[in-house]
Length: 176
Image (tube, rainbow, N blue to C red; front, top):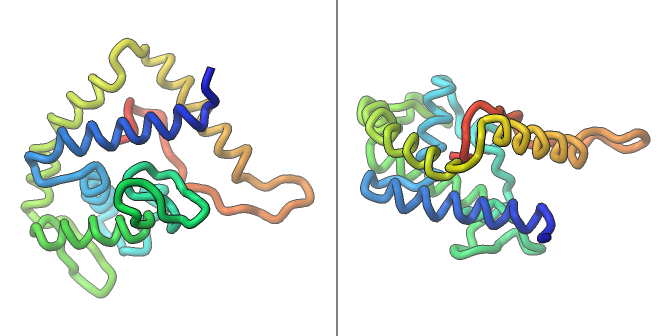
């Protein structure tokens, strides 16, 4: 049996590649879709809010979320923060996001329409990615991953507090 880290990386790569393909006709990527949703969820969003909202580390790769020793791995060689900046700029250029103030982000009417339009495709993607997985299995898998993350990022006796990723939820399948 391969270790969990192997399957986490393979699953994230498969999710990203498959979702990018599913969203290409809409002019979006997985990260672009996540940016739009993060801004929709926080109408007062700032650029600085997005890394925590999307659990993106400055050294993570934009295609897989994994990090190498250099912080630049994967297909593009961009760090997570570079990829996030590029995704935000792409959504601004496409007219789906605007800047109502310095560092602020807001959905435009086109951004809201794109979220509604793409939502049906994302739901089909989620169903495909979770085929053969019961709701209980999905909740168990997410709960285990949340606990492992807490084990590795939470405070330990005698150790300084380590920063952890943004809190997530186990409400639906496929990290989209």
